[in-house]
Image 1 (cartoon, protein in one colour):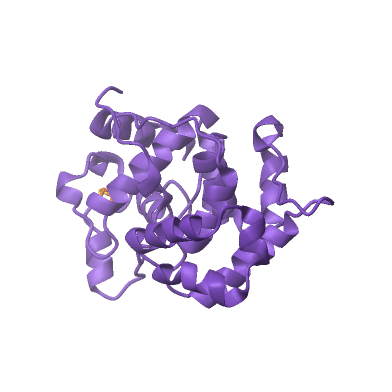
Image 2 (cartoon, rainbow, N blue to C red):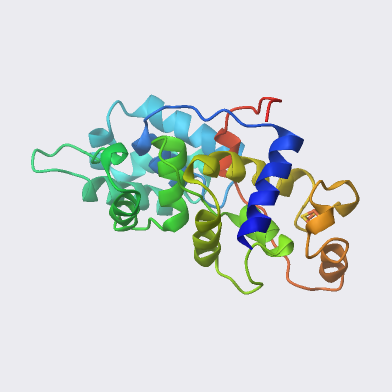
Length: 245
Ligand code: SF4
């Protein structure tokens, strides 16, 4: 599986190019943005995040806001009541002795320690933690969302019954951490454009020659086999790919 994963990475670089990995450090923005992205479209969650930033000047003011004000600010993202509770719970958990919202600098930590710190926050799972590291802190991590999971199982990069967490472990072990960003972004792009949930377009797929499901995934799906649903992907925040591999 490891050599296949590395082969997939190389083929996708040749096909899509190497996406530029922005060196920004805004982990709290990414954390809140990822909470807002749950169960909604990219457009709606981005609207909700922009509205939140317009309405509140600091994370402390978000934490201390009356619930109805925060709900109103993020209404565009859907499930506003639940998401407002989650955001305020996370911000309260990150409040230090001086009543400031503070997240320890993730860049100087061992990666597993950073994952442990993030997943200890209320409602933060492995995928959200990986998004915060990869997109918000420029720290290598490999978020396994519905696209990455679906395509990985179809390709045979993980066993058919592997959970997203087990799939993340396998993918991370197969690749150099410096490859995680490009692999994640390119695999999601493949999942959106070619290896789609209901009907993969194997006939135009650059991975067809070594795919365990080439030509069969669409058949299984049309017969009522396991279906996958697409959700907002962190790759929507990725920088555009260059053409150079
Ligand atoms: S060959 Fe088909 S099933 Fe395999 S990755 Fe490509 S589109 Fe998906």
